[in-house]
Image (cartoon, rainbow, N blue to C red; front, side):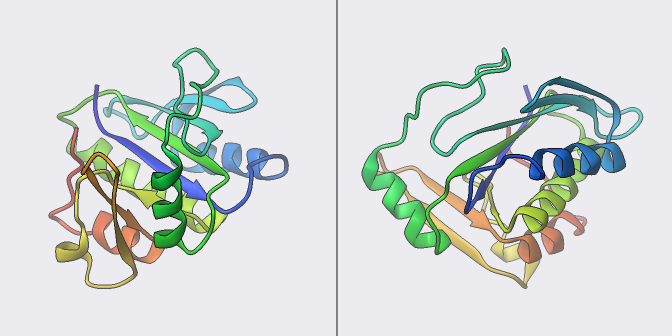
Length: 172
């Protein structure tokens, strides 16, 4: 399994945003399969690995079968995300790449995350990867979970700058 990115949005993702996501995937991806109203599988570019996108409630994850897990995030962690983002996230787009060693696919995933983040006024959760040393513009925020884990959140401007750089690589 490759990297996973979450894009947190300030409102729930319903129609017409779901249709706009599908259109965006049609522009950025290849061989798109819409598995249900909120789940897609696709290739990011010819010769790259397969990827998936699921729309889930904030604090949940895709269960890999078209549904999602229960919300797993502690209330204190939810509050930390809200403080860092400047809004209370309502939904998350989970972007998964199914290969770890796929530089072209990772970059395409980053560019798709940028487009989705910009379209939905959201921010990208990069996990433990701190892009601030690579992007030089935009906003990168840091959230420390109650268990001590640190994640970095990038707005679309920061994500675009980093995904366009030669040093771009996602953690698996």
